[in-house]
Structure formats: structure tokens, C-alpha cells
Length: 210
Ligand SMILES: [Zn+2]
Ligand SMILES: [Zn+2]
Image 1 (spheres, rainbow, N blue to C red):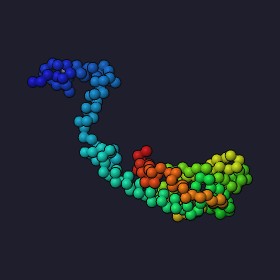
Image 2: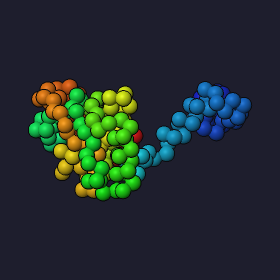
Image 3: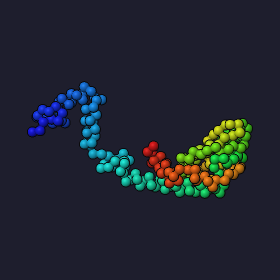
Image 4: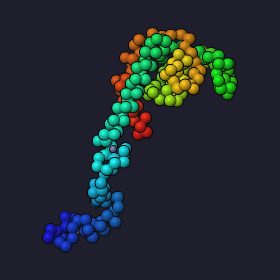
């Protein structure tokens, strides 16, 4: 019979070695404890944390790869439409926007809020940036505060895309701004990274993995 690879004695193997068990008991965070813990995990059948099926891991999950592709495809499609709308309407960082007439806002509470903001900061604001990662097909499902606007007072806030983006936003969206001064946005696409264009950057967010 082979002797134990831990203590060198015969009559038992490493898995049942009393000396090794004692070492682990004495130092549960130590080297041997970690080695045995890793081995025990490897003996268990592996379960994919994404699809909950045994036999593979998340890293090689085919369901996950397929779902990522689907989400990236949806983002890519929405972003393509978004960019062409930007070009058509002259929208992007640098565009001047203006509060819509508060009377047009369906929610009375929001209408009052906009009236107050107009009194305080004025009706016009500059689009200083977008939250690019939120600009994808999620906008069609639920209103997003996807743009960052700055008022002459210096006050800065998040807002929904302006009214010109109807059809790309959810049907109940009630944008607070409209475009008042266009920019030339023909170069906007070039400023965005490849993963934004391909939609791969937000796929995991849509799959609740981040
Ligand atoms: Zn032993
Ligand atoms: Zn899986």
C-alpha cells in the first residue's frame, strides 16, 4: 500500500490523514487548509453560475454567449438609430437645449418642478456630456437620465434625451428639453469607442451580471 503523501506513513492516504487534519484545524487559514479546500471544490461537479447547469462554467457557457450577442445586437441597433437621429437633429455635447413649455408636461408635479427650475436657472442649458453607457435599448423600456446639461448659472443636472428622440424612448417618456441650437454631429460617432458601437459594453449589465 502507498504511504500518505502528507505525513509519509502507511495505512491511510492524504485525504484521511490525521496529521494533515490537525494541521488544518490548527491553522484554518493556512496553506494546507487552502490547498485542501481547493481540492474539495474541484471534486464537486461544477455548476455554471449563469445557467445553473452542471458540466461547464460561466466562462464557457453557451447560453451566456448567445444572450450576450442578443443584448449587444439590440444595443447596436438602438445606437445606430440614435447616431443618425443625432446627425439629423444636430444633437451631441455642445448642443443648446431649452426647457419645453411646462404646460406640455403631463405630470403636474414635474410641470411645477420645471417651472421652478426655469425661474431659478433660466430656460436654456448646454449639453455638456452624455452618460454613454446608458444610451442603448434600455431607453426604449424606461426613461433614462442619459444627458448632462449645464445652465448659465453653472448648475448641472441629468436629463432625458430631448423631445427630438421620440420613438427611441419609451412611449411614456416625457422629455423636459427640446433642441434650441444645433451642432454639427457628423463626427460624433468617431468619438465613441468600438465597444460602444458594437454594443458589447453593456451586454452584461442587461444580463444582470454587473
Ligand atoms: Zn498521513
Ligand atoms: Zn451555463
